Image (tube, rainbow, N blue to C red; front, side, top):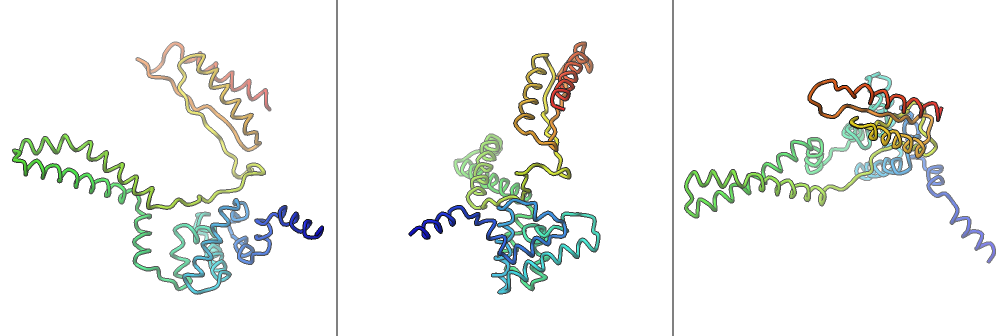
Length: 276
């Protein structure tokens, strides 16, 4: 009984994510990413990449290891060709981005027409969205104008109906398209890096707070916010700054502008001396 309890306790404390990645041969291959980005990503992103490998292996009746090997090989070829973009030397470009078609072609897989249409729609989101809104707006307008014409409306009245209906019809079309998109399109996990242990030097980041300078009290509030953000996110490679401008005024330079800028500069300098 004691052994059973100890075994259950061991199973409960086991880090299964780390265990799985240690024994996964696909994981070992993907870690050969030429861009050296894959190993710095979080578990959800790596898991999504592995799921895509599994999906491609199932679609091609092939082997998961072969799929992962080809993805890494494509990234290596892009690096050797020195095509300038580090993005295409990342294995994820061929698994979850525009290089997927290239990987499928390398694996000898030809997607169905339905999949091609689906990808074309997602590759052209703006035209598809605007076309949907325009089409629904036209349908609504034509329906209203047709009803008015059937009721005996004159040409001027029909034009008036169209103009008066344009705004509500377009608003309804936008709402309907947005509703359809949220119901039809499934959300995907965005690829992201794992910064739980801190931000590396090569990914140093500046957080900018945009604001308008109009009163001395506003500047003091901005400086307090800047300090709070810094204290809540202490990292040697994370910086904070104010991006400011002046409020609307009757002329380009106002008498109080220089004083406001000097106050903001002194406040930022004081914060730098306090925490550096």
